[in-house]
Length: 152
Image (cartoon, rainbow, N blue to C red):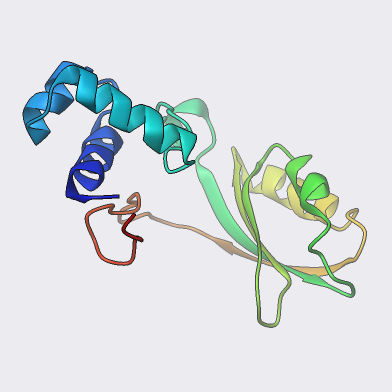
């Protein structure tokens, strides 16, 4: 991945609806060359998907919480059980006092409470600790122009 690929990724994260011609003008390549680079980035799994960013509050899911899930067993095989709860947006196996960290969105705190109840139905879950977000200062995608990404 070179500096042009990184620039393309940054531009696509800002607005994935840009034409290949517009992207090409921004990075100094033809539309065809940009199309080929983007195709290769998709094939290599660098670009996982293209999606619209939607405001959760506008859809009635204004309550955001992060839940630390404690367990009495290894939870690494429980991905499907967590994915079965549609309110869970992300689930991560973590190191520390908890086993899994989940990001949850609901419309109300009562619905959040119901999600917590359903988490206990997952085999091995022994406890939860929820933190409700009061305000989000910002959220940002990975910066492809920053260090830490492998050259290749």
